[in-house]
Amino acid sequence: MNRLQLIEQLIKEHGLANKGRSRGIVYKRYYLYNELRALHFTLEDIGAMFGGKHYATVLHGLRQHEDLKRYADYTICTNNLKEFLDGKQESYYTIEVPDLKKDVTNARTFAQFKRIQRHVKLGKYDEAPKPSKENWEKVGEYIKNKLPDATFVSE
Image (cartoon, rainbow, N blue to C red; front, side, top):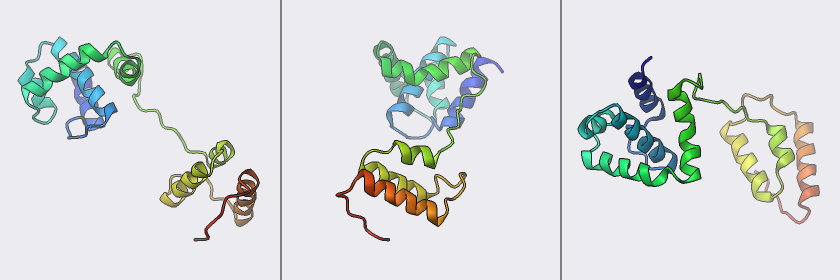
């Protein structure tokens, strides 16, 4: 695959042509704007690749890229894209398998335990084997020992 095809693949896989405005999405857009500009694409062509963005939006993104590239969070966010485009990284995605036991062991506050409970309800840990009733009782005892003054609401 040539560099242009890799960029098109990244745009599609990450949904960069959509209207998302989270920091990670915007940083990736800015970085890819710069990569396409280095391939001598016009501002209008770059905007068309990103779902019909206006040329002024692309120009703003290019200027932002120049300003942001000296900051560590921008570099960290775009480093995977750079490695992928340079061929150093085979697959862009790293799949993190959730581990219920590790999350419960590392949880220190009541809010963290509630987050784990919410993730269990949402099915985040469905890939992991479901704990038995005895194990849930052990988890409850562990939580009560860690946070003795916490009140629990039965659901």
